[in-house]
Every structure is written in C-alpha cells, then in structure tokens.
Image (cartoon, rainbow, N blue to C red; front, side, top):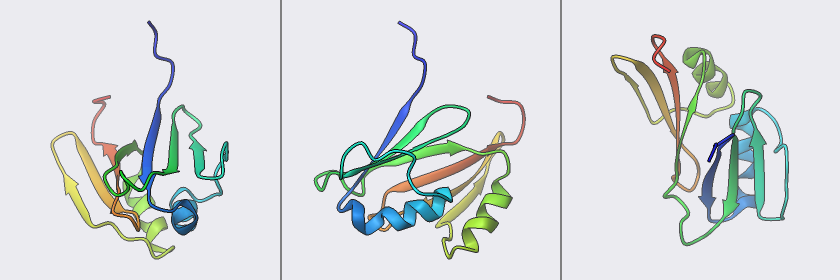
Length: 116
C-alpha cells in the first residue's frame, strides 16, 4: 500500500455559519464544494482540509498545518481579526494555535530546523 496524499477533516455544527471564517483563514473561497455541507481547500504541495457539517463531532477536531513563515501568517490573520489562542516555541518547531467559532483547533507549525 502506498499513501499518496491526505485529507484532514474538521467537523462543524453549521458550515454556513463558519464558512466565512475558514475563507478568511485560508485567504480564499473553498476550492471544492462536493456537497452542500462540505467545503474543501487544496494546498499546492499536497493535502486537503475538508470542513463539513457533523453536529455530533463539532468542536472536537484538531488539524496541524505546516507553514514556512509562522510570523507572517500570524500577522496576516491578525489583519483579518483572527488571533491565536496560544503560541509555543519548542526545540524543533514553533506553533500558533487558533480556534474556529465551534472550538475546533487549527495548529500552524513552522519547523525551526530541517526536522521534516
């Protein structure tokens, strides 16, 4: 078996209510809307984030996204009135953690060294 890509899922209570927030975070409308209650964003180097309606699991999702310039991302999101709930620096990565309106966790991480 060869895994060629990954799709990270984020469960929300009402997609219509949070769609604008995700469009602000990703800086664009969804790349795909395969169903009325699903929105998907594709990343140029691979992988997708899928935000979908699932009231039973809403608010319990956590997704980590790797970025090349965390400071620039935090500054850009701040200009859109989106602020991290916490920031951390470890031995190998620095992170900024955001929460969507349902409480789902989006972690943006930048490697400090060639660890990945």
